[in-house]
Image 1 (cartoon, one colour):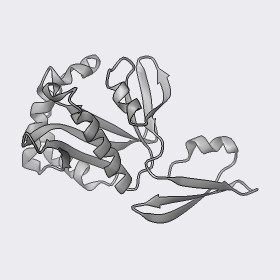
Image 2 (image 1 turned 180 degrees about the vertical axis):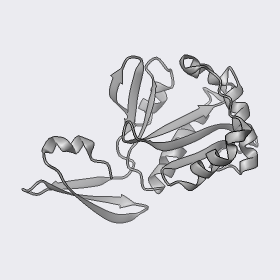
Image 3 (image 1 turned 45 degrees about the vertical axis):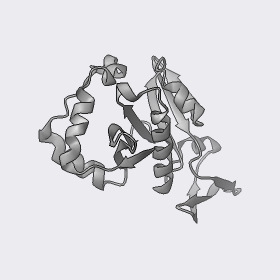
Image 4 (image 1 turned 30 degrees about the vertical axis):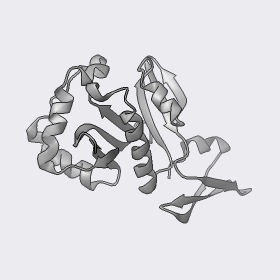
Length: 195
């Protein structure tokens, strides 16, 4: 069984090891492969990822192996105006269904935190793309060698238009009914609504 565990700052040595493993980071070869997660940045990194509501980070813990086997995260990406996720499973634990379990748990955590959309921008030829598609992610765009995948409904929601282009949204957030209203200039503006 897999669970997500937010680490203590002293446990970031596992992240350093994970990002330095060439086999695990082979998917990142176009961006330099391994990453040096230097101890000098741990304090500010940890403060941001553990305290800012636009960021979420956790280790993937395997109850059977009694150890961490990877990491998951999401953050609000200003360029895309979307929450973008990250999932890394150690190379030796891939193709065992553990990544799928971890991704499902991350989607559940995002839902509990009030998110309704979650994306990932991955290389078009990345074999993990099928994992995302199997879990309900859809391709929303592709350019050069990057494909954006989006899980479009972490929470059910409904929207209504009024004649003056006020849009009312009704949705669930942590099991509670919430609402949101936005005035747009054109119906085309709907594709840029983020709430």
